[in-house]
Image (cartoon, rainbow, N blue to C red; front, side, top):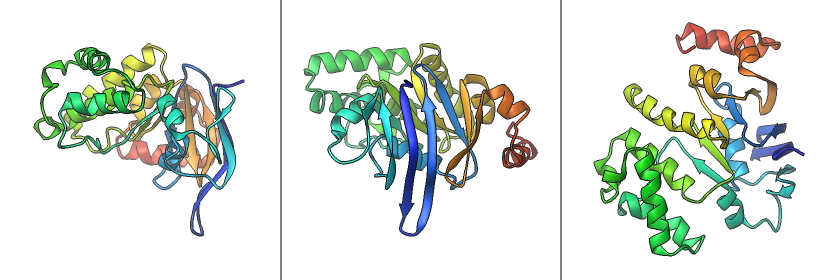
Length: 247
């Protein structure tokens, strides 16, 4: 049994189908990069896996337990499945430390001391422990995104979902965020990333999935997808990426 099993899921907004019978398996410790043109369903797929979007058909399971449909405990799901977006979504009226400890104290019922100790350990790991008492608007975009990743990690998730986490950053700030993802991958964190950073996907991914029209059109190891894709749509997409100087 795979750690995550996505079976024939469908998601529409009105009459517009965004995910159309998508299936995908993710093994424990895998890093799966989702690539494809805008509107192909990458972000929507990640949001369905965290319970932020309901699906109209199919199912998603983690360790055999259903993650979708009636009766699913969304709080339990979000403890296991962390998500980070391209917009940092930090609470502006809370310090960095308060942002990170909010969910562990409210959802996990951790004591304040335990939550703050975990938060400070994670902040030190990314070199931002000296920013614990700062407010988000005093941080750079790269620093805010690193804090957003730490906030998700503070819940002790089994899986991390990363949705275009460098898209809103200036180019010089991208590397400091991607370095954290590299470290998590090296430590064996199971991750799904929607990304336009093709070089990074080629470097860290265990598996690359090219999404097209709401389905996994082609999947395989990075060497195959980027070096010798089987499908014409995949080849055409990557050719445009190469012409844009992004691979």
